[in-house]
Length: 485
Ligand SMILES: NC(=O)c1ccc[n+]([C@@H]2O[C@H](COP(=O)([O-])OP(=O)(O)OC[C@H]3O[C@@H](n4cnc5c(N)ncnc54)[C@H](OP(=O)(O)O)[C@@H]3O)[C@@H](O)[C@H]2O)c1
Image (cartoon, rainbow, N blue to C red; front, top):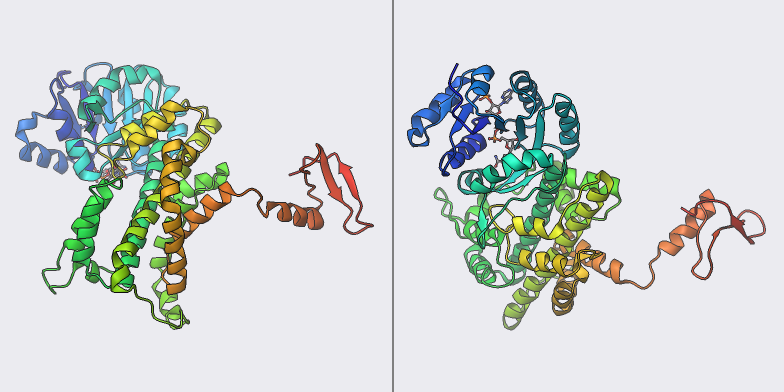
């Protein structure tokens, strides 16, 4: 058995795990033990990175023996069954007080279940969302750990050592107990879906409206990246649009099949939001837009359906103004997506009893992760100024931003509808905005309909109580003992 020399171990040495192990090894004070189910990956990592001075283990028992106590291991294996198998194996060889961290993309309810089961052994279990893909794992991801306060004492300094740094602060915080970290990572991914869809819609409108080439639109995105939209996703969009396909000489974006894939975290965000009763319409439309794109048979069958009778293009003199309108629509819709995402975090925290600091979440998303963006500082400030903020988009900074963008946003949605260009995220975000700010909603009529066919009762604006109209009788109103819902 090896001597206990490593303060941290990594299980699962595919791309994420090996990069994370290298990141850990590169930080002062860390000695990293590595284990993979099949030994080839362990050997490859040892051979390719002697500088990391990894401590290899070929069995779980060896892995446990190589770790100093409290033993701390980060699992980076295939989410689902793989994760359960590794947890089972580690709980056999670890002792009470040790810490197992799942850094994979687990569903937060699985993390809650696993934490409960592992806690019974006395071992700590931490579900940690890790964002930033391969590059982030290697150079500094944004890390969203849940789990117990006790495990954070040991884990905090280790995670701080490998996290991205934004404005001098490590992009990691103890999000909350049990599944809180994976919950917040899930919502992060949902926001990422919305952000990407909004950028896609902006590109499509500019391209079809102005006839600009992908390379010209890349320049527009580069320009936008110098302003309030500055973010990783805007930056990489310019890179992708500028790329030319070596084989055909065409813009790469024109030879990529237009069917978007998904790994499921966006769908989880929406499913969870439905259960919590939180309208995350921008995120939902982004998930559905990917699904729609990936239905080639339906798209082919529908391709002859009629569109607008007149072709639409933006006159030369109006092109700059149109591009600016699209920029504003994108900014406004993005504010809605974040506002909806934070609503879901607030509702999740309430439902599961987590004490989540919204401002801290925005702060740890400023570096390392896919949705890193300049305006996250504004979110942190908004929650610092008013921790009980009921809707992010009503904070003074965002309300002012919406004041400056909403007219342009409306023009873009009108033009998109008239031109027959799908813009589900732009338009649903605008509908959400108008829904929230409406004095009266047709929900009153819906309550009337529900009372008509199901005697579901309603409340009145002018007095307390719950009421029912005798629709199939003489249509007088009676006060009801029902709940009114
Ligand atoms: N790729 C990304 O950009 C990204 C970003 C964020 C989070 N993540 C998450 O990070 C985790 C790792 O991702 P990845 O792409 O590096 O790897 P992956 O392809 O998801 O998983 C492969 C790894 O899982 C191991 N594994 C699978 N089943 C196992 C089992 N029953 N027992 C032990 N080990 C098992 C494999 O071992 P063998 O070599 O023996 O097969 C291999 O090391 C996933 O949860 C993923 O969702 C990925």
